[in-house]
Image 1 (cartoon, one colour):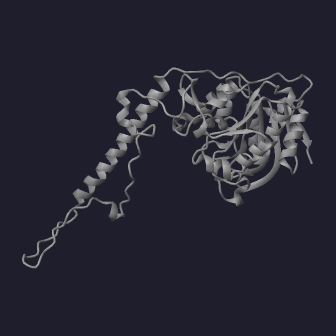
Image 2 (cartoon, helix red, strand yellow; image 1 turned 30 degrees about the vertical axis):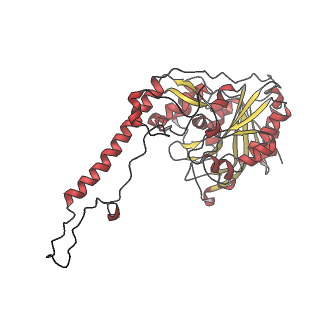
Image 3 (cartoon, helix red, strand yellow; image 1 turned 90 degrees about the vertical axis):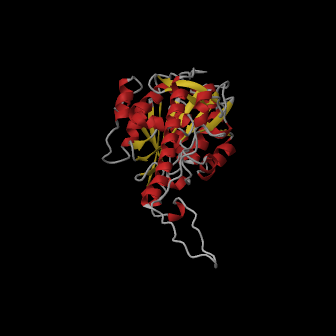
Length: 372
């Protein structure tokens, strides 16, 4: 078991600050900000001595100063890469993550699409049509609910899962008498601001969940894949008996659309830029690690452009749809239908090739219902 602070060997210590994993980034110096340029003392004349010419700030001096800043930045990058390589490939994993899937009754649909004005009612109707939460969650279970809480945005801006969707999933788990219901995620920045402004902290707490911010969580080391290596994963995802993934469908500048598979980036800490070196394979490999009990895609309102963070209400379209199912690849493929002319991304094809689900969601014969 590990917490947020980890011991590193002595040879890495020069690259680490006292409180951070890597050293602080080098300051950025704007070329037109002369107040940040290197300064040199200039002798001042007095009443008894003749004036001396001032020393001019030469081009060479300026370039020397800027070169020092660039060099410091390069050292910071090099230190980060060394620490990142050590963390991922020189440490052993503490734990593994279990397969959280369950087998539904043969008479129940594997995918349900619910439409209605109230997202909470749509969630309940979809889950009930699949046999109810008690068919998925038992009284002894620790259930982890994984929304998308990536950004410091309001519910109306569509960058995060709708708080009423999260709250209804919590209520359903409580009604199924789950032993614990935990809501957690790792936002891109400012965790508490994202949890609070999204409305998820208040809604999930009121519904009876334990809400755990990443800064308050313990971490375990888990091997994601041979290529990605070992990462620190938030404790709830490691101890969970059941996991319910409830992403929001929205535009993403790197993948076109993001939904359930990419939502797994939030199981680890904020220094996850390494995933983006081959993002499509990273998404699929994370999906192979995280096999959820249930996926519920929030399509109640959709951020159509300028994702993933959004911010402009003009980019948000009310679609009033919720999709639930046990095939995460099919659910993501369905999410792409909310966005005209968006091709299915490579990560879904890779995931399908790994046996994680099927892109052709229509083959599951999804049931469509109206929730009112």
